[in-house]
Length: 422
Image (cartoon, rainbow, N blue to C red):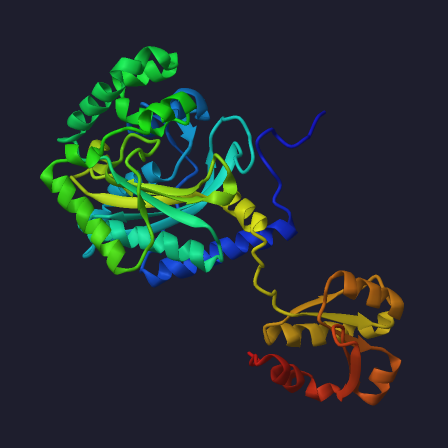
């Protein structure tokens, strides 16, 4: 029997989890500053939800993990996070909230695609959805929040690209101009791109095809094809970002891979990731909730993959925050282990990380293990300490050791760490 790891998945081991905790804790801290609240949705939904929302995408055609359950229901593991949040918004009548809903989520997503650097078949996303406001400041707020998040993580060489894909009323004008511009070169493009030309020319701008990109370099400014309302919205977004000193660059070929986007779209990219340089993407989607059976509800959001972000953190040698100190307790004999349990619990009540190895009673074995575990302090308790009601405390970084009264354990570590005993 082969129990090897399924292709396109990974085990996230304890050392790696430190990066995950760093990203997740930083994201939650930033989202809290903007009053975004967490929402958790199931990892599987009705297949029809994604068929309705992203029906023109290759995700539905080639990449979704679908199955029929015992009740003969067609279900799919979620390939992205926005559709489930929109469904939850409708299902739970969140439109009745006194203010518009500002939500964030995190968790696994599933797509059957070719595994590559930073991309897995089970991958993890963190995303935000600001639902209920069509004000351009909502666009600027989520863009600003993304920039603040990645800056707080210490990332360097990041850029924000921004564009407007217009509303439903001006989308046909934009698509007609794209067709007009590319028509004379259509025969030089791949069959897949020619199909997009017929049915969804806007999606051609998202292609990485080098031949197409050469042609697109001369594409006229598509902002001229926007309706006045869409122009005003986009100009206000840009004005807010300027006022907040958020660096961005207008990119007329920027569109998002999913079909539900309207008006503002944006990406955060890093020059250190090569050709696949996007680390975050998002934009406005004013029609999605109505298309799913809810009332007309404008919304804007973004999402990013944790795996690719961690890959970038490592590539840029971003240091993780220092871990809280670890105290190793060495019982120099089985008869002293019971007392060491009490010492450990007292220190844990103070908020310290504490570990004991009950299989070792030899001092040298304790020293070697404490150093491997990168403990900061070792508390030694043996015959001398028992007889004299003392504790020997060794600073493993400074390689200094001192003896204190056992009754002074908590005040000693309170003074050392600034923590308070609970």
